[in-house]
Amino acid sequence: MIHELNARIVKIIGTKYPRLRTMIRNHPYTKIVGMGIAKCLVDDMGMQESEISDALLEEMVDKGIALYHENEAEIKEIPVLEHKRRVLCDRLKTIATEHLEAAAG
Image 1 (cartoon, rainbow, N blue to C red):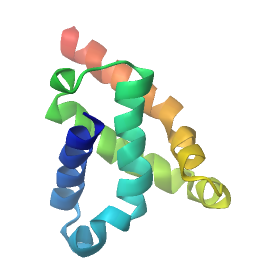
Image 2 (image 1 turned 45 degrees about the vertical axis):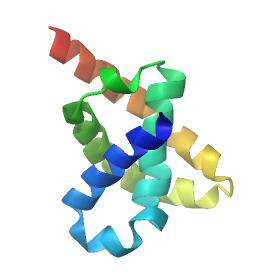
Image 3 (image 1 turned 90 degrees about the vertical axis):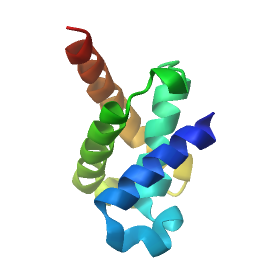
């Protein structure tokens, strides 16, 4: 399930940043932000892939990349990839919750 969600996220990143297509699987946007979004939504928030809209993913990718740039120095100092994703996860949860509340309301 994470693989299908990650494929959707990679597609969004590839569409927004076409210059990254040749190296997209190894780029920090995909490895840190993309997988951070997928793990946050599925593991931490307990959402199913069918519940996750493309609009939510697009918003989270845009804001996740902005968060990555805000915290880039801190993220680069962390040696473990999973811990790098954790830096973004708390903020990404807030973004997802706000989006879901706005969509429901």
